[in-house]
Structure formats: C-alpha cells, structure tokens
Amino acid sequence: MNRTACLLIEAKSLEKDLGDRKWISQNISYAAVLGVKWCVLTNGDEYRIYNSHAEVDVDEKLFRKVRISDGEPKFIIDTLVLLSKEKMRGSLLDEMWKAHFIDRRVRIAFERLLGEDDAILIRAICKQANGVTPSEARASLKRAIITIDFPLPKVLEQPVAPIAPPVQPKPEASTIRREAGKKARETMTAMAEASLLNLIAAGFVNAPLELERTYKGVRVTASIQSDGTVLFGDETCVTLSAAGGVARKSVLATPPNEPPPATNGWTFWQFKAPKTGDLRDMDSLRREFLASKK
Image 1 (cartoon, rainbow, N blue to C red):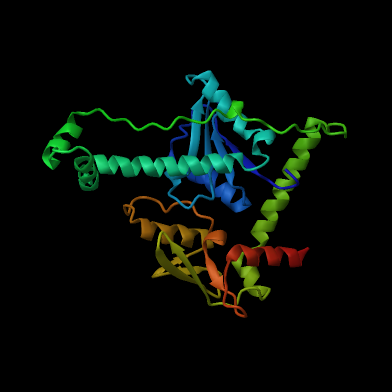
Image 2: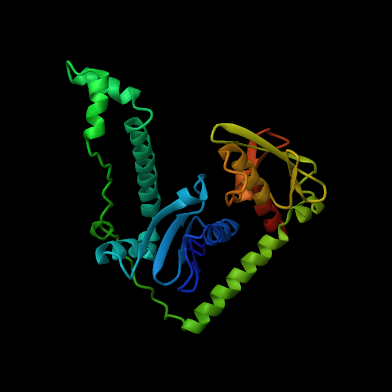
C-alpha cells in the first residue's frame, strides 16, 4: 500500500506441518529481511498470522491461526478478512495485536497466581472473605474449576471507511505478477548489496563498531569486525541477524539444543552516533547506504 510492502505470505504445499519451527522461523525471517511487520504462513488449508517485529520468542509472535477444513466459518472469515487491504489500511491489526498480547500476559500471570505463586491471591481472598483461613482458601481453589477466556473481537462488525474505487483500468494479472516479481527481486538485490562489508568499504561503518541493545532488561553487546563478521562474546557470527538471535537466546536462557530465535539484526542492534552519542539502529545506516547508491 502506498508503494510499501505491508504483508508477506509464505505458501507451503498442503501436506506440510505449519507447526514445524523451521517453517515458522523461515517465514518470520523473510518478513524481517524485507522490513514487513505482518506475515502469513499457509498451506492452503491452515493460515497462521505472525507479527515479525514483536520482540518475543518465535512461538509468541503468533497472532491467530485458522484451518478451513475444520474451523468455524465465522471465525475463519473474521480472521482472513483481516488480511484484506481495507482492514490493513490503518492500525486495526496493531490494536488487535496489542490487546491479544496483553490478554495473553494477563492470563499467564493469573494462572501463576492460581498455581505455584498463589500467596498474593490467597491473601487477597482471605482479606475479602472474612473468617476464611489461607489453608481453607487454598483447598477451596483446588476444588474449583476456573477457566480464563478472552472473547475474540468481531472483526466484521467493525465499521470500515468507504474506499473510493480506482479510476485507472486494472492491469492484467500477468502484468501484476511481473511487477510484483520485479519489485521483490529489486528489494532482495538491494538488501544483499547492503552487506556489512559494503558498508565498511563505503565508510558508513568504522570497524570495530561497538553494538548494544537492552533486551528484556538485560544489556547485551557485540562488535562488528573489519571482515564484516559480528563478535558476540566468544562467538563469531556471519550476520547481524545471527548475532541478534544468539544474543536473545542468551537472555531467554533457552535449552542449548534450541535454535536461536529469528531476529532482524538490523533493527535489533544499536550503536552510538559519533557526533551526538544518541543510539541509532543499524537499519538507519543501511537506509543511508542504499540512498547514497541511488
């Protein structure tokens, strides 16, 4: 929209299991490289919508999923209509993601209060229920069947601003495909050209360049080397994204056999501007480099 990519759809064959973490990571990585926030992974039956820019683990980037073969029709339509231009124009998806993200965190927190971290909840119950002891309250909760549910918003009932029809004639489908393919190739070529080595050669990066990022309250650091690699601790990474994934994994303390989370290293890593000392993300340098090439 407005000459800007806003949605990436990765299509797999019907027999593919979309729950496979490698397909999910691949889909999110493609979107991150192109700078697209919303992406869809589908095999034609199941559709999964992800927020590639959310700074959470890969599994938590999932916003919504539906399966046409066994889903409730209203929910399927409600979900797929979110991907239309009419719905993506504006901030509807962003607002729904924010509510979805908060609801998920609240549910997890409440489940913890009902489980192992129930001391705060027990004290609150005893304060409200006069004469009930902590042990009695705890025993009562064990007998209770408690569910936490957040109803999904009814997308189709939300008003949509009327869209004026285009006055120019519609191009043929083959022309659209050629233009889309050409733009995608141009974008990928530009991104490939904006490598760290080329930024170093053009003087946009003076190696070694110190990088940093505060992630989940933890400050992590790395440095760009003169050969275009990125050093994080004792580990040498070939790209900013690889280093960003390793850095996030170190903070998340995931099992050693788990792959690092998919990360857009250009937006993850920051550096201090020499003149002002302000923190800037590496993507700003990449944009400056590409602008100079034009």
